Image 1 (spheres, rainbow, N blue to C red):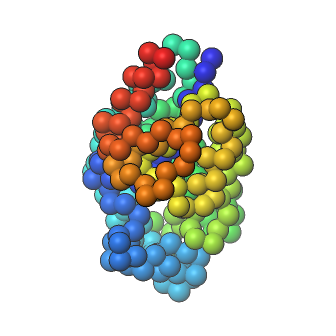
Image 2 (cartoon, rainbow, N blue to C red; image 1 turned 30 degrees about the horizontal axis):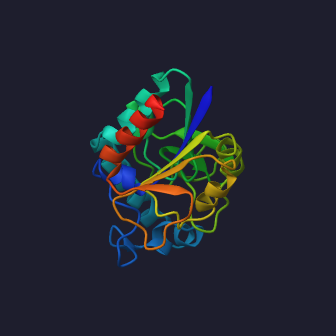
Length: 228
């Protein structure tokens, strides 16, 4: 069985109406990224950070999977193929579309954990407020990997990338490490497709660039893989 490995970023969710991680001015929803996406920011103003992610969580519940999410989920039914998704996105749109094998490198909005123990992770159906405690007595926080924190699933993702028969990169600039380094784990000779509406100034050798939005580029490449 062939293995399709898909690395997705903010550009996939953007077509569903979720704002990309940061604007050109470096702000994320009018906040400095270091204020809302770092351990230091949380230590300075935990109420602000909790409210910020409460808003992001509410926004994510209002949107729906788009054609890119749906076509990737549908490809799980393609005979002879297994599909694994490695995503930098913190929404659950891949799962809501029907994908069953998804690695969330940067955590999930729909999860929360104790500040005392990273391994204590719980479903987060609503808001997290200051004073909401985990069973171990620690303040609950979003299950999000912030700047300066380790990416605990990166080794698992690297192992998955190393078994790819085709690698599909969708909606990510390949500028955020360590996620961007996953490209180097693909086996020699593995075809790599990069789907993004913005053609890079300097493309990498051996990569096919599909200069289209995810919602049209992903179904097109999947049709080729199915035929091929």
